[in-house]
Length: 381
Image (tube, rainbow, N blue to C red):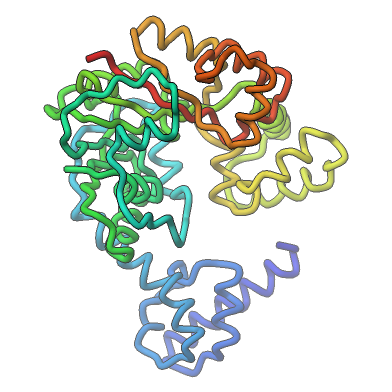
């Protein structure tokens, strides 16, 4: 926002607040103008807007910016707390996601029929080393670090499950997830607040554990991974996502740039940084960051460039951990073009399970895993 826009926004906010207090008319266009720059639920006495008659288009804005946030705030009280959150890193990460739940989303996938977990993996990774557990039962699922629930809902509708427990540090994120689950009519998901580092004594075990974006935000990713492995049944599988040191090289440069200029994580600082990076798009690292989808909004940009805790790993590091823990590597998720290019480069690795060969491939094609490493492993039976 320009200084002129900031000044106009301040005047508009004051006018609308005064109109609410006096119960006088508010022009729909003025309300929508404010909503384009600031959330309506932040306006003092905003709930009084709901007692008025508005055009349908304005009602939709009120639903998104007022009714839904109010419903989420009310829903927080019903979310169970499974563990204490006492570690400094956990508290800092929770604070970030309470202020900026990530991501805010609208729609998700709805498969026509849920898959049996083993069937899905055998079809997705033909020739893999998956060892069928042979239980024949629907899966008990744990989603660790579920955020605002998009992936938890996708998992619940993709796999035949007996139970789904989704945990996160942030109550704001969990409340968003809970509301979206009800809105979409998703299969039953049990949402709960927890620090995964404190889940050792949960007293439950799972056939599938998903850690789709949480381990790299822990003080020690491998320690957190071991906690989750302790909750995985023998023969169970785990889907893991981790940041790539190679793929995030431009993010590392941007984070150093931010530190040099002492930008904070306030919305005004994020906006100022984005203008500076846009002006530097002639530099490859800045062009890469500006081109990221996460650059576009305040919450996602904060997650991309201002996260309070971030680790990045390499495929040899991951391979070493799998070997040390005795885990069976099932396969990396990759698009068809990437898999074809890898097969041409390493035709001898027909199952595409050689992580050290994948490291060579990534070194030669450093943007391969911009969307994180995403892969599946199995715990020995």
